[in-house]
Length: 147
Image (tube, rainbow, N blue to C red):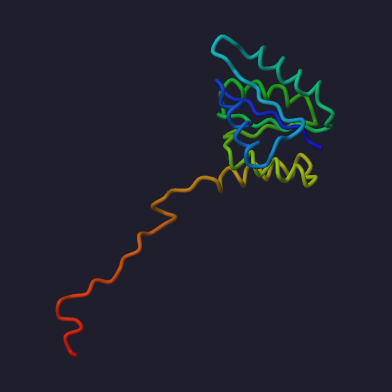
């Protein structure tokens, strides 16, 4: 199994974890890492190390909120030293739900990385591009007078 670490600024990671549990149910070996304003990269590295240490999994996927942000930068440093970890940025609820569902089906780390990428992008929808308003034909005063 692959552990999942969700890392974000503020309490976004906790929110994603709670919301995903509403959809797919609670998941073992999934941890939210909160990056507080008073913390720095070393705090994040310690949190990632603690999450991996507490895990029974052999592979680890870190989903971060923002490419180039502190949670991502620390995760990249952490994963660069480990062949059993990878990092995906742009974490969102569709991404997390699909990752957790595929993880339950036995997906390995490379597959979950691709699932995260695909589901994260696919979860972005724009109303005006997805749904076109339906128009109802109007009946003019001249129509239907033949009878």
